[in-house]
Image 1 (spheres, rainbow, N blue to C red):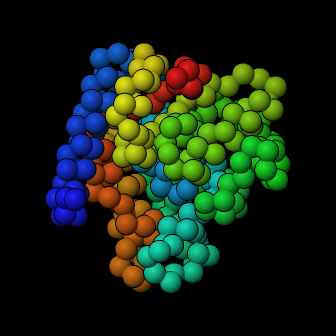
Image 2: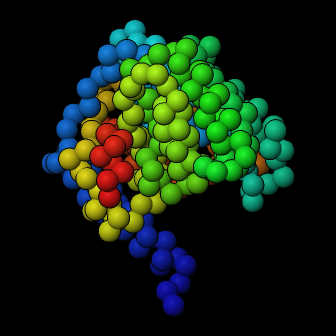
Length: 264
């Protein structure tokens, strides 16, 4: 068997190749994302997903005066499980402080952050107790905001809370009395999605957004999460792989039109 110190570089090389393929497909076969015409809602499973996946779009929308609301499903308190003995409530409290700072960096008010108090790693799945109640609570909040567009994680993110957040977004939208555009953003998609699975995606549904003009604002928001360390020395958001972080050095953000993205 290959030694661990030989396997890691090979995996990183594979991830870089896969990332380059996905970027090329998005640019060659996809389209440019048009700025929403009205309020924007971002559904995020944990504090930092809204920045990594959609920070550029959020900054651009805020700069144009469009209301931006973030529905934060959990406080991310589980990010230090297996790392140290940090108390989950303290981790969650710290991450809630960071999301308010990140909101300021991106240009929207912290008053437009909406917390749902779910436990990290334990979002209820369809058919489980609490799923319909949470979807109803989300729908009530969305109804008050009356957004033109809702952003949710891509269904192939791989991370369970991200997958469930997308299902909750759909369930909430189904409870509304008006049509709303649903778009998927990409976070762990870049790091975890197998190449063969990515090649099967409907890339004509891909939407790219040039964020060069707000790249520094997005980086500032990412740094808020990455530079705030817990007593153990790792960031409150947990220790994120370097190849994961390199995906967000791109001058674009990748989205998918939701209905087409599920036709796989």
